[in-house]
Length: 80
Image: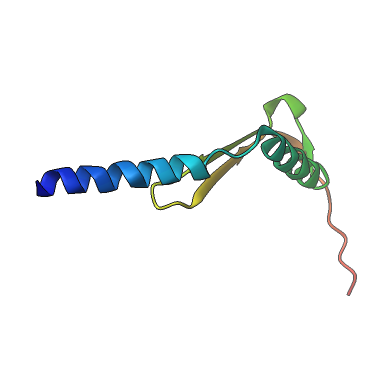
């Protein structure tokens, strides 16, 4: 009987995590566009190489992987 309770708890936990991971596509696309724009201000990006993946970890936190190739980095001017 105890085993079933553990399975029920794990199933409920998975349902909650799955519900939380259903990020609307529009939100993902906005985050991707904003991130790409940010990095485009600092790097000369190879546009085709930019990728961004968002996944949900078991503990409920998000893992965001951003990858791109850059042909150059722009000089950053600092005012002192």
